[in-house]
Length: 527
Length: 74
Image (cartoon, rainbow over all chains, first blue to last red; front, side, top):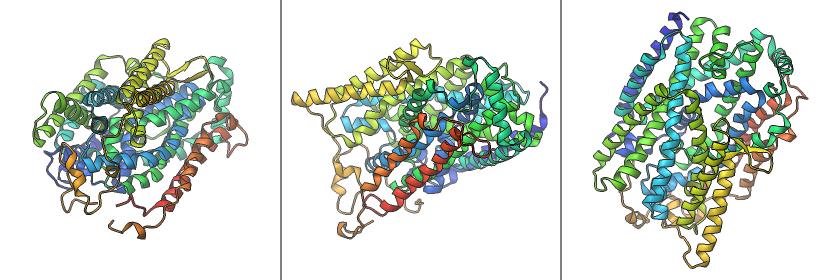
């Protein structure tokens, strides 16, 4: 394929704009970036609007935008599980995240594992949860690069050099500006994505003769295929349980991911989170529309690409349907869309490393500035690692890692969410539950050779492996905690209940029990 | 922020039960996995789930507005 210079020019132009914003972000809400709460959480000052853009840009990733229509294009209705998943997640966020945010704010936690350490008085259990997060995040960052790769390859340029340049730039401005960079860039990213999706969802059906014609064509194509390869536009009964369990399991797992918690912790108040739980589903609507593009690709007769299989469908569809300049805008939206989550994920993984690995086990008495430096350097290492990963490991393997990552990550649910409400959890039962859940999940994944995340455990047909894993985990945690209580060793929450609520005047004595000082935002940096 | 407890508006807890509605509406695909009735050519299975995005927003926003201004909001 020859290089498409007009598309490329638009992508490079928007790339330069985003780079400038990334570096200038260091001056936005100016504060001392040699402090981890400033570099890694932007001082916990983000209001409703910034948080909406940041979380939207962070959770609805470039890989999602490629993979969801890819899955719909490849297997039809099942790919739409992204819709129930991203609807039911928000009642859960509304209920749980404000409480986690409040205790994190009161006690200066930067990571979820900071809470686990304090809650269970165990740096080893905290390490376990931190490593789960880091291991689940690495392939996720690599898949963001994959999103850029799909776009670059479709413009006819060799992806390797361009990827390296894009990632060096990303690494540099993340190092300099921290979380402020992806937060500001998210404004550009989300605006572009919204524009592209709204145009696509009107213009492409117009060209294909309307939604009726599109689904009529999908049904014809599907009927002509052998049953195992059909692409139905309505879910088939054999997949009912798989569909429901993967939606529920994915919803339980998403906000346990380090990059999601970083977005949560950086917001300014409980109110900001509750409002966002109400308004973030706008992105779910958009994701659903992107999923429909998979059906449009079937109707338009797009063929799977050699290099990317079904995941090349959306890029091909855009090139078939749009004038070149708008394809350029769409590709830029996907490429920039990869930078926001990649930046937040690398910051989140780096914070876990500096806080819960380095400070705990290597250098307990380091200064605030040193801690921030360790995080900055770790964020570089994480990104270079992800880049090496995507250049060296076959993509199908990385997608398997990411599937496995979700199955492992969901096992942090007892430590990060259940522990907020249930006081009498026994620490060792928590560790055993984690091990049982991760063990069962990994066993089932090996059985299906990591090629899918559904497995038939012997009841209910094929169900989501992660949901089975968390059920076993919860059973072990409950039984273990009851036994521990009967033996007289009932677990207890080391954190006073008052710490889960806003501090009031006169409550200052509560802050005297923690190991790192609570950082209040500097005057004038408020929302 | 510094309002004394007695002056705070009551925050009804029962409305939290409403948050279960999206789960009931979406986690039983056998209820909605069918093609008819279509909405301008879009199968019921698909437009029903899109409708729940709006439904989810309505439920969460309603719960938020009924319970806002309580003790946990500073």
